[in-house]
Length: 132
Image (cartoon, rainbow, N blue to C red; front, side, top):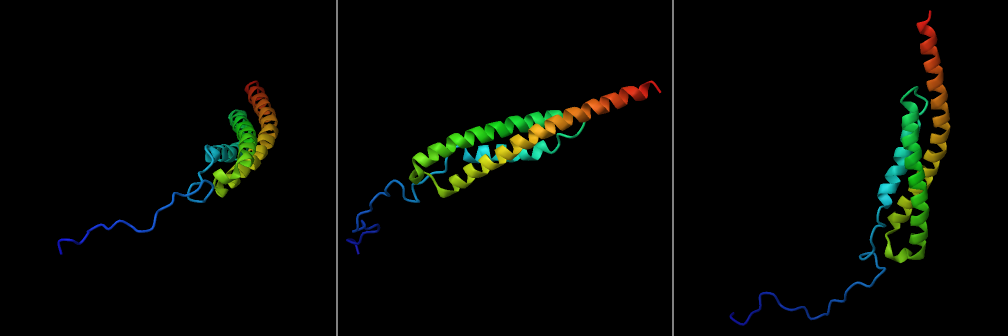
């Protein structure tokens, strides 16, 4: 009983995982953040037609869309240069950031123009009602 080992040493050697295997792959840094920027851009751009506050929302959506779209292009190039280093979900997040950033960019430009027109019309209607 005295010669029994409590924690025996394993007989098979443990090899460290090689780079590129699923256990060593990492998420692409900031891919989730830029995906969220793209989603925020799409959501905020639809408030652009509201008088007075709409253009502010459209400008915020425009900035978020530009950032998400431009950063996703850079991330895609870096991902394509070394795809074995990153998880597959990173590619999906980068693609979502690209698509939502582009949609938010286009829609917020349209909504910004509509919001400015609606604000001007609301201001004119408000000032014209003062004189009557």
